[in-house]
Image 1: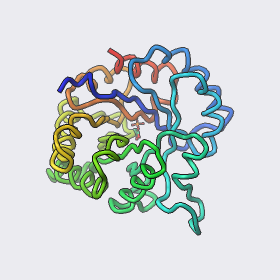
Image 2: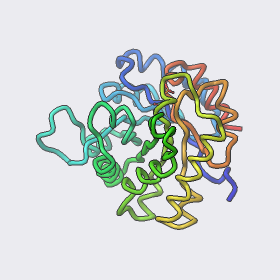
Image 3: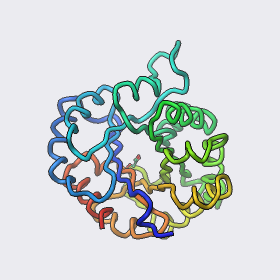
Length: 255
Ligand code: 13P
């Protein structure tokens, strides 16, 4: 399988940053810098920024996503947003299972799987995040843990539904710390993730799925990380808040 045949996807995760006005301004700055990208470009913004972000990105190659969705269609879930609500407003992508959601808001492998299924049923592309804590890496259980997270989240999906899934490998110790996984570490776990998908859905599905690396990816290290066979893109936190830095990563993925 030629890696080039898979979709390369660079997605920004803005986390809890930017007001709607700031979102519009930043997207306006990014549009000319990423317009020639030879990869998919996505920005996952806070819920309240979605409308402004979609308006600002209109007519450009930037697609807009959210950072979470609930698994029920509606109901008594104060503070939550359903996948249908997102798709009804034209949102195309949603992150599920980010480690910050797992760590601070009680998301589990099972509820992450439910959120992913709801996202796919609503016609969204789901970006499923998996990854180990430093302690778990030291214990030597990274491969098993990431495989388990993937297996539980993808349980019960059809190969057809899987076409709308992106998996992001994000080692928790590399998120926001400036400490990036080496390209070999990223490749090793992304390969395990692809093998896990193959065992569940077969080789064609495994060959086709986009697997991103996330965790302190920046303009300097993107080239090296993205050169790896099983690393098809990036999920970018801090560097996605700066137009030039994000654009440099998009360029690295476009080679
Ligand atoms: P940083 O790029 O800031 O390390 O964040 C990565 C991340 O969590 C993306 O989802």
